[in-house]
Amino acid sequence: MSRTVYVNGEYLPEAEAKISIFDRGFLMADGVYEVTSVLDGKLLDFAGHAKRLERSLGELDMALPIEMEDLLEVHRELVRLNDINEGMIYLQVTRGAPSDRDFAFPDPAETPSTIVLFTQNKPGLADTPVAKKGIKVISIEDIRWGRRDIKTIQLLYPSMGKMMAKKAGVDDAWMVEDGMVTEGTSNNAYIVKNGKIITRHLGTEILAGITRNAVLRFAEEAQMTVEERSFTIAEAQGADEAFVTSASTFVMPVVEIDGAQVGAGVPGPVAVRLREIYLEESRKAAI
Ligand code: PDD
Image 1 (spheres, rainbow, N blue to C red):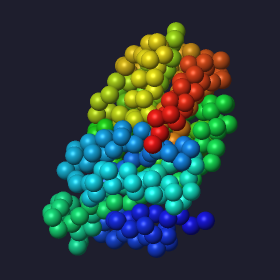
Image 2: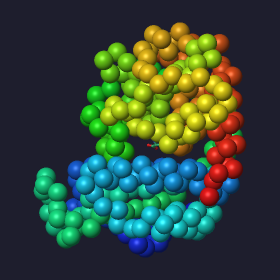
Image 3: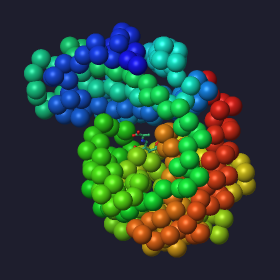
């Protein structure tokens, strides 16, 4: 079934949606994005995604070409038009389409930003059997640029990382810089040791996940101990549990790292419990 998508103020059938070949998103990866999950036809943590979008745009001197409250309505309208019960909404804002290719940014008064949103229908997203088995990861060197706190659309290396994982017969890759794990290709990484949840501290080296923020809050509310610091692959392999978080996977257990089984090699109790709490609380707060 053809989707209805949103492009610069218009709702269109996906085949009719068009973007200029001069768009800086296309030519320079000059843009930012957000992925917001949908459960029960409602948006999870829209406010968190909106805030991070504003921050990403601000860091790149880019303007949001729509009011934030209207953007919420666009999300809701796309959910309605495409009849999404479980899935995601992808949003992308680029620095627009100037009349020619040029490294210098165009004058925003002459070149408005481009905004695109579309839905991804994923029935069974919350109840996926993958979460019951857990995923396997390999480690790869993190060679991305130095501003990973900005959610830019430059996703070539994360895509290559997923392909390296696929080639190795596993599900994903954890990236390592100066011997320490930064994050997964499209998620934040965690380990659990003696009941303590350990995840890298925020900084320019990783993306401040919206799911991470919620999960750490729920963990503390459930009297679990959280330590925000970096860790090595060896420490992760020797941990009791490991997991990742993102808008598309929620809390996903990791059961193998570079061929070494983590803990009992099955999803651990902390990850399983956090997934339950996250889904339950997020559903309650969804709008
Ligand atoms: N990825 N780190 C990276 C590098 C990411 O790309 C993502 C999200 C996260 C988790 O952020 P959040 O919890 O806000 O989803 C961490 C999205 C889902 C994607 O690219 O599809």
